[in-house]
Amino acid sequence: MSIELTILGCHSATPRVNAYPTAQYLEINSRSFLIDCGEGTQRQMRKYKVGFSKINHIFISHLHGDHFFGLIGLISTFGILNREKELHIYGPAGIKEVINLQLKYSKSHLKYDLIFHELNSKKSELIFEDEKVEVRTIPLHHRVYTNGFLFKEKDKPRKLNITAIKKIQEIETCDYNNLKAGKDFTLSSNEIIQNSLLTLDPEASLSYAFCSDTSYKPDIIDIIQDTNLLYHEATFLSDKEDLAKKTRHSTAKQAALIAKNASVKKLIIGHYSSRYKDISLFKKEAEEIFKDVILAEAGKVISI
Image (cartoon, rainbow, N blue to C red; front, side, top):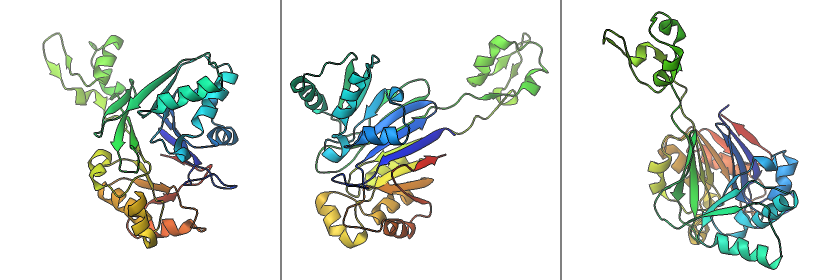
């Protein structure tokens, strides 16, 4: 599996006995990320066995409490556990000031560096990249500055066709990396052997899009087109579409329309309003538009 997503929390507004604010743990191509950090996130991490030492990058969509009030507690716990490795935090401008004030007035002293990447662009931008994965923002429309995040594997190297390679004596082990990179092979006679004759297509790169609190925003479709897995908030059902518009949230139907028009493979919905006691109604409404719908629930693991 190249992508594994653990839902740590998926409800809106305040924490309740059996309802936890937004937080997700994502593993993609051997990389680990924490997405949003609502109150109680570290408890949920312990409950669902998410190793604290795996978290080096935290992405915060916006500065509403149900999406980041658990962050200072997690940062503090890392300090108590004598963490030494630096921690990167990506979030809206202002997050550095908030966290540093909390650390200052609680007289908390960390043995590790906090590195903030503050965001303010209204356009999609690359905010993280290494040799395997890249992360881009998805500009959303909420009551405060908000981003979603698109996590995407980079193109994988081509696979060696060892049977074909062994038939050509001039190809040595030191040539393999060039072949994996898609380069043709030139014989000593200057004859060129096409790479496609020596390699096989790699596995398709996978992607996950996290769309936090937002009103219905069709212009994100170009950014998330053909994504393998999409999480899109669905705070309300269509019976409260006027309230969704007023509070800048989405309905299950609107989330499904985004998924359908973006041709994503699977849709996860969450961020349910507490006014709804039966969350299966969200799935029922979304499935009228889009077939493959998953209800977010704390502890649920989605793998592709």
